[in-house]
Image (cartoon, rainbow, N blue to C red):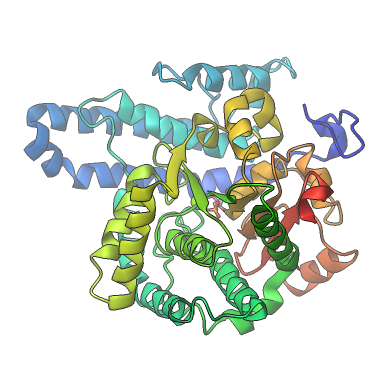
Length: 453
Ligand code: F6P
Ligand code: MG
């Protein structure tokens, strides 16, 4: 259990309610659709499994489908959540988490699909998909979401080309750009990276959700939908880290990205990271992603390298130039990709220091950590029914390995750090404001105010 800003231990039930009522509708409506698509993907690919593995591949596909159909039935009929049986490195911690859900209430009924916290059951479904595949070699490592991620990347080509052309405008003047203009580029690339988060396939249950128009042209129109904008503080943080490097207080500046979705969003992350390195604001970037297919479109190590390779091979000069540069950064070790089981667990981030101390220590050595997307926001703030005016810092409940920033378009019923009256005004104008993906936030927090100076 984490502490709030005063240092007191705050039981979750007293600090804010877990977002629970939301679970019923979404579990019933969206998750079965995603499972049906997964089953369909496996079925459509049976010939490929046969070509690669013969009859064994077909048997594995059938068994995996049968496990997934059973899972869909459990979900639709509100059966109890079952312990995992696949003996993977995270199996025990998932099962311990399940026990923690059961025993505080002493009531088995509470851990059924519709009556459990939404964040938990949603994560659990993706882990069970992983189990259904893992138990069926030789297709154990197959990413059932790969097709959708690939398609979304190709459908965003126009936007990717526009973004890489925009980057070239900055790149060709590199060296002569005054500070205020550098900040303007930063603000634009940051906002593109923010709105890139609209393109996730989990909210659309796997349906096309790619970026089709030029992301740069839309920025001015979208500005009014950014409900909290801490980009100036973020900029100050980067400038102060650069000054500390110049004065010899640190040898290099490192920015970590906790990635969200593949496709257009990942390209926007890479472009922002490229800007930070090319402009000398950072010398190292670490990307943190998922170790298996997660929330339909989240980035895995294969997606990360595939995206760089595809960009290199693009039939567009500035896009392929970026791809070549990105590959070079990876080769030289300035960019690196990391995964950790903690990112594919249901835990809130305030538990990270206790449950994944190695990961927490890694983040502590970053100068800035950028958390992308809605799911990361839910885990930062614990998916609680907070009053909208509660400070971001308080909702983090002690989580703060380093100065951090959340770039998130709103897709779930949680939002903190708003001005008094801002939430109710939004509710009367736009009742779906928290879930429709039209609004966004750039929210910054530094655990140690010295680090901001
Ligand atoms: O709304 C559906 C949903 O799966 C949310 O539960 C989840 O937070 C979100 O989509 C995923 O969005 P993102 O890719 O931005 O984390
Ligand atoms: Mg996602």
